[in-house]
Image (cartoon, rainbow, N blue to C red):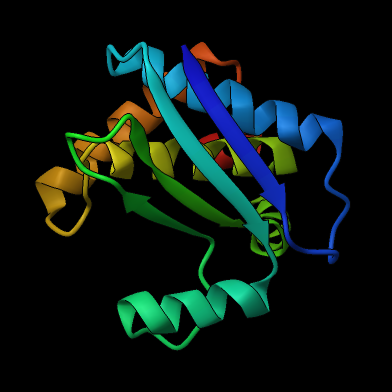
Length: 150
């Protein structure tokens, strides 16, 4: 059983049922792909100002980011916490020329892989993490737009 808690703490963009569904679908897809079956994930939806504060507090980087991941460790049924800036997700979807659902899905899967221990600090890690992200997103039907494939 996968337990997912989602809290919307922002008002910059509408937090629709479609957004909630995309996040849940991507968490479940990532857990399935990683061979998991029983875990808990907490997701907090914020705006750029809130994620900027968290990024400064936890990573000493004083700027807004798109998503933060806080893994809980191996002994906890709680896989971890995800903090996602819905504002940044919409900005990036516009910038990259794809749908908000694709960007929200990508950020959720990306964060889930961090919860499972993936990283992208080294080139080989980045390549493997990107391969896993695309594999999961493809299975979920959240493929890249035509502009991205050019």
